[in-house]
Length: 612
Image 1: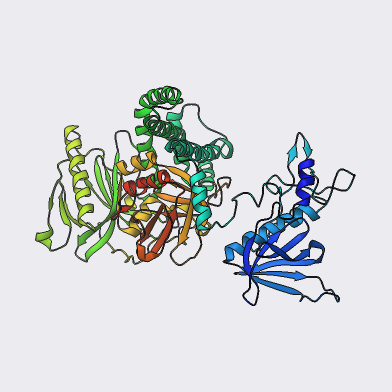
Image 2: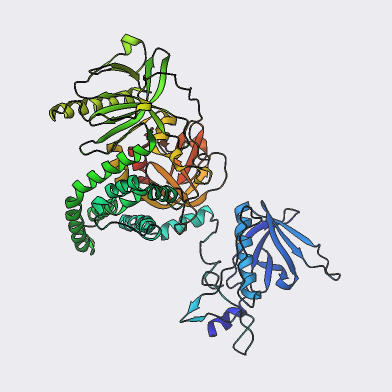
């Protein structure tokens, strides 16, 4: 204990000064030690407040408040006020004071308080319990104690006065100079960040895997039959169908159950893609040989499962669409493939009316949003692709971005929201028509609808839809009464866009997980969150250990740019997501993580004037 004895005699050992001002504006510095709070002017200690005299510590915005116990012999007021640089600085210093006070004044572990069901008041920050060292609690001697039998104080691994909180960066608001020093100390090798991506995405995969292995205990032996058998069993058992529906409504099941069942197959593909990036960067490295061997094994496995993966993804998508549609039976039949879904305007006697179109390998179905409890879309009509022709008709009808579909029984005039959407639809429809004619299958496998839905496409009219677009508040998982209202189909409906099966495949390949700093348009500070990008959405967690997300942000229709100089975002590695009046800034930790944000643009958002 010679080191501790020497440290006891050094007044400034382990003391970090926090700039502040008193009420008169005099520049001071605050610090915390084992005896209490210290006040410095320059490097000269001008005052000290012992823990026994301090009644309460608090902060309000930039003001740090010290409430003292009443003392008739003291010349100080009951409450002392210091002004610090920002609210974050106040909060950081307040946390350090709480940790030091608990470390040097508590004689037993604090018992956790029961959490309020609905509302909480004040900060949730509490002193953490002591750590275990070789099966026993660690009780080192404080600066004012020794091995003479005095009662020691409990210590936390993150609250040691020799290392934390003064000598770590956890929760500390750094200055620009400290930021530069920290950046120089951080790893700069790209391989570090590639390997880190493997770790962060693995955390999300393990959590998703736990959903189906821990939360859902009964699974079939062969993975390729899970989706089909589960669907068949749900049709045969009303009880099982209700159980699956209740399970999907739980917070932990932030995706559909079928998506979780495909996670092991998708993870093999992620291993392959990440290892390819690692080997591309690694050639002179000592781990290159092992990484290349692992890549060879994974690539062989992915190649063997490629056909199964494509088949299962198509079945999963058909089963998912079946939940969003009403008036359709046996959507997931052998040979039928999903191609594209999206919003188009259909020209009728009442003018242009918004419709949701679904393109399959044998039919084109158009629907409108119904007034059901599950927010399902009602089928209005279907066009067989066999023998269909298509041509642009903007000049003929005077409707921008319009084209006409000529089927064997009827013709339909539709209009897209923009030129790019029109081109995508026309290309996919022409491709589907060629494939169905090459297979020489006439319109025998049409989608079958119930009798109650076999009405004239425009019979009775459809209520006008003028609903606000999805916002971050609406997408919050806490406010959803039914998760069906936030699916890809509904997002496309509200944002007047479309998604193809190719887009789904690209999104699967570019799933990401990791820490990001988020900032709203009108907020001052950055909030550190664990972010998961999957299924065209960002899911926000407080940390990677949380079981379910706090909120989600569907990204279809969003634009991705870098902030302009006029936006005064003076930080590195920041990208901006915006849709109409909704603006979000995200800050990554490195150039590699920043560049990995490109998949957000390539698979679900609009890339607008970004130079990477």
